[in-house]
Amino acid sequence: MAGDIDKEDMEAILDDFPTQIKKGIELCKSLAVKGDFDKIVVLGMGGSALAAEILKCYLKYELDIPIIIVKTYSLPKFVDKHSFVIASSYSGNTEEIIAAYREAERKRIPTIAIASGGKLEELATINKTPFIKLPSGIQPRLSIGYSFFALLKLLENSGIIESKKEDTKKTEEALRKPIFKEMAKKLAEKLKGKIPIIYASDDLSCVAYKWKIDINENSKTHAFYNIIPEMNHNELVGYTHLNGDFHVIFIRNDDDHERIQKRIKINRSIIKENGVEATEIEIKGDCFLTKLFSAIYIGDWVSYYLALEEGIDPTPVDIVENLKNKLK
Image (cartoon, rainbow, N blue to C red; front, side, top):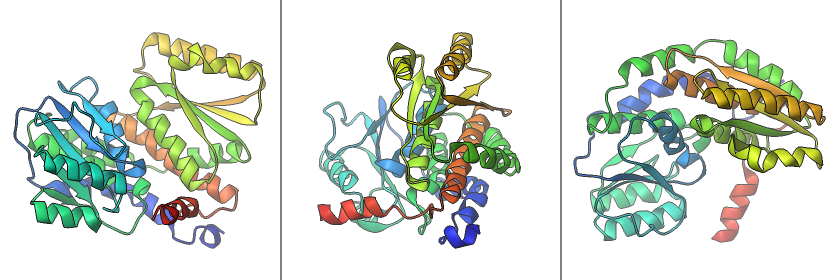
């Protein structure tokens, strides 16, 4: 049945995701950047910005300099020669990233490009910009193992962070367990016909965001996310007057602040009292990197199985391609 719906075999790509970790590290090899940088600026849109979103979460309490993601055509004024710019476009043809990359080159800002080819690779070759070439042929949202671990290795090589070799190994081993698919199937059954809303702490914001966009693109349905405690100051009130058939998902980590954990418990109770079903996902792992990617991997499978539940091929994003054609 899956083969009748999943015409481009996304299942095989998801099954192979743990191998992206090792391959992503190999893509970077000995590439490094040197300089006195006060910020890391990633130019990225959609799936091509996901690696940076996860890096921000993962290195939040370790980096001395911020990771800033730019999702538009122009560079903010604060992006200067003390910035380290990473232009990320899986296809290599994302027009916003090409425009911002050209501006960085004009201003002689230290830059590295990462793509599977396209115009960005062509420009990087002309400008002699260091380039990380990603494997081609899959959707950008499915390539984060390559891009995240390539960028992580780049930061290691550059002396910006300490080696993550042991944590990386633990993560690759953890993702090979069958529990992720089993959990995802059960949750996808509950989500059929619902509008998912995903909540997590700020430390796991990248996970909630990844779940949201995977459900958007793979399951072809609306999904929304927010952060605790911020949602307690506004969004929680929306449950007093429901205008949709929702299912709430809380993504929880035992390392979350004790007040966040208490808020999750109370929020779940309030939301259920107001007639909305809620599911709590507790993520486990030997290190934070494993926890992050375990939670992300569950979301990948949830969105995949939800697409099958709805009889939808998870891979194509025809409406986005239609938009791009109209923009031409």
